[in-house]
Amino acid sequence: MMVCRRTKILAGIAAVFALIAVGLLAELWQFERAQDRAFTAQAQSVTASVKTDLESLLANIEVAASELGETFGERDYTRAEIESIVRDKSLSMPELRGVTAFLSI
Image (cartoon, rainbow, N blue to C red):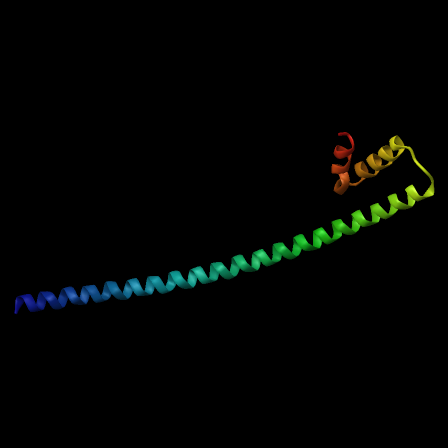
């Protein structure tokens, strides 16, 4: 009778631990899903922001290129004049500063 009672107690304790484990696993699963949703929303927000910034940057570069095209269409320039014009334009626009480094090579 004693072994049977001890077995029932141990089985009850095991059942309680099993229920706790199942509850913790369910809570962990819900937490991970919430984290995934939060990270996905944040990634979409950052992607949209980068896309907007990039579109704005490209529009600014397009305007600058058009302005340079008009300038170069006015008359024939020497290589040194062209380099100077491009360098001045690139220094006035952070988006184009890499052009100056390229021209100095």
